[in-house]
Structures are given as structure tokens and as C-alpha cells.
Length: 436
Ligand SMILES: NC(=O)c1ccc[n+]([C@@H]2O[C@H](COP(=O)([O-])OP(=O)(O)OC[C@H]3O[C@@H](n4cnc5c(N)ncnc54)[C@H](OP(=O)(O)O)[C@@H]3O)[C@@H](O)[C@H]2O)c1
Image (cartoon, rainbow, N blue to C red; front, top):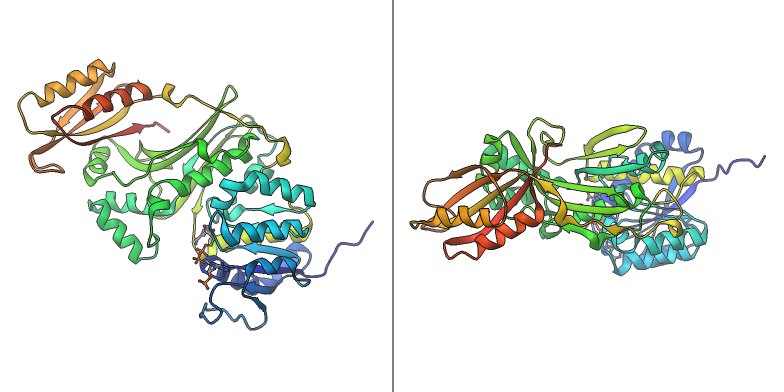
């Protein structure tokens, strides 16, 4: 029997922002426990970021510095690279490719990179015989990639769902708790550091879509299909939508769902009304949740911090410990070459009751025109409520409709008909209601 390698696993870290500095801190704070559990120390030897002089709250003096992050891959004192620069291309991609080509394992928190290039990078890692891991890229501190690739690996997973973006969950939770509008709560989230200065990736649903595409690949044995995620953000949700949802016993969440049915894959991220008392409906603040449904295990739910220095570092270091042990399996639970390209399920076929919000000009006959347009689209109305005057535009009146079960195609048809009416004062909003 060969003796286990007890020499330190030497790490080069690219990016020393929130996550990179967190990794440095965690490796120092828990060095003893990490070495004991991994069977060998995990030690930083070299680092890189944009500005060398910036104070990052950690002592970087013991580590070699590279101005060019890609050079970390070629260093003799770096066995393994941590990429926490970010971005789907640029230096992050160049570094990961260079490290894998040099036969060095990589740990990344970069969901954008994996959502766009995960297949090619996983194949490159396998060709080089080294690990590529990205636990921190999906739901931050929640070990959900580990659950899919290890703990639940014997199951056929048929559905993955959850709340994968903490910024959106914070905004929606605050709007519900305080009755304040989207713009005001977003500004507060930015001031508190929960939302980026440019929040478009978060509030537009792209960040959650990146994570969902990665989860789906690991869950279903399919190639990452980020382009196949139907994505809608929370930007158009109003305080009135949330209040009405509350009246109906629902909360609005940015729900991500991937499901495999008869060989077809559906992936969607969109605001959804879910029962307020459910696990997802009651999820507070920046918390994330992931629900995995497998054929033998049943339903497993995970909740926890989806971002932040500590949780993200926790996930990265766990991946590093697997690499130190020589026990890091494939990124997507099976060799990447064996992943199949999934057919996209026809989304228009999906059934659900819907919440519809319209803004109508305050004119005689407006409501009748609305009702008949809905009827013509084949959608049947369960409840209808007209609010007082003074909607989004002066002279406009918000009208809310809850439909009976309807196909998405019919809802899209109704929305298009109503948007085209001359009494329609603003783009209609349609939110699916899911009894999860
Ligand atoms: N923050 C979270 O909670 C979280 C959670 C999960 C995943 N992630 C992912 O983790 C990654 C990093 O996120 P973060 O929040 O730590 O970002 P961040 O705070 O903006 O840090 C990015 C770091 O990358 C460095 N950098 C930028 N361009 C570089 C270049 N060309 N060469 C070398 N270094 C460069 C920056 O250097 P300077 O400091 O000198 O500017 C900075 O240290 C992203 O992929 C993100 O999506 C973040």
C-alpha cells in the first residue's frame, strides 16, 4: 500500500475580494482541523488580485504575489488554483484553462464561468486527470453539489427547485414585511451590501439561472444548458402584487425549477407565488433553499446562507479538502464526456393557475374588454379585483385576476391580447401560482 501524501497542498488564490479574503481567513483560522480531516495541511503559497496595495483585512506578507493571475498556474509552488476573480471570460477563464492544462486542480466560485464553459472545462480537467470543483458557485455555503454528486448519487433526480439568489429573496422579503416598493428596497439592499452596484445579474434572474443550469447538469446527467433556462427577474414586482399575494395566502419568490420529464428538460427562473407558510414561501432574507427530489430518497430540502465571505469560503475549502484527500469526483457527478444534450421541454404546455395584473385606463367598457380578451384566449377567471383609481399612471386603474389552471401558452395569449387593447395603460404582469 502506498503511504498517503501528507505534504501540504499548496494553493494559489486569484482574487482577494469578499471570497478570496474569506478563503485566506478560513484556512488560517481552522488550519488544524482542516489538516486533521484532510490528512494534510492546505496552505496558501501565492496570491493575485488587481491592486497589490489594497487593505483586505488579511496579512498577505507570507505569500508570493502575481500581478498576472494566469501566472499562478505555472508556479512550481502552486499545486492547486482557487479562482475567485469572477466573470465568464477574461482572466478567470484564462487562469482556469491554464491551470488545468498544467495538470493542476481548480476550485472556483464562479457560476457564470461554469454555466457558460462548464462542459469544456470539465472535459479539460478530465483529460488532464485533475479535479475541477465549484461547490461555492451554487447556493454559497449549502453543500448541494456534494449532495447531488455524492450523498444522493444513487438516485434518479427528477426535480431540482429552490431560491438561488439571496439578493432577490432579501428584496422580496423586505417588500412583504414593510410594504415598500421595489426601487426603495433595492437601494437599501445596495447600501447594506446585499446587492451589487450593478444589480442586473441578480434582479434579472441571470445569477439564479447560472446556478440552476449547473445544478441541472449534476442532477440529470445532462450538459449545462444555460441558454435553455427561461428567465424572468423581479424588477416588475410591485408592493401591490406582494400585498395581493399575501391576501391570497401566498408569498412571491424568485423560484428556480429544473425538471426532467420523459427525456425532456425544463429549466426556469421566474417570480412565483408559493404558499406563504411553505419552506420556500417563508424563506427569510438572503437565505437560499434547494429542494432535490429523487426516486429512492424522496424529497430532501437544504436551506442556508447562499453568499457572503464565510459561507462561500466554507464551500471552497471543503472542495480543497476533497482535493487534498485525493477524493474529488467529477464536477457534474459523472465524466463530462458522458453527459447528454437534453431536449428542452415545451414550456408552453405547463399548467398552473396564474395571477395577472393589468393597468387599465379608467374608461367605460375597459373591464368588459379585458374580460372578453381573457375569455377569447381560453383562460377562465377564478377571481377578479379592481383597485381604486391612481395606478402606475394617472388615470389608470390596476385590475388583478386569479385564473383557474391554464396552460402558459393561453396565459401568454391573454396577456398579448390585453397588452394590445387601447385601454391597456402598462405592460401586464403574469405570475404563476405553485402549490409547492
Ligand atoms: N461574494 C459572494 O458572496 C459570492 C458567493 C458565491 C460566489 N461568488 C463568486 O465568487 C467570485 C468572486 O466574488 P467576490 O464577491 O469575491 O468578488 P469581488 O469582491 O469583486 O473580488 C474580486 C477579486 O478579483 C480581483 N480581480 C479582478 N480582476 C482581476 C484580474 N484581472 N486579475 C487578478 N485579480 C483580479 C479583484 O482585485 P482587487 O481587489 O485588487 O480589485 C478582487 O480581489 C465571483 O465569481 C462570484 O460570482 C461570490
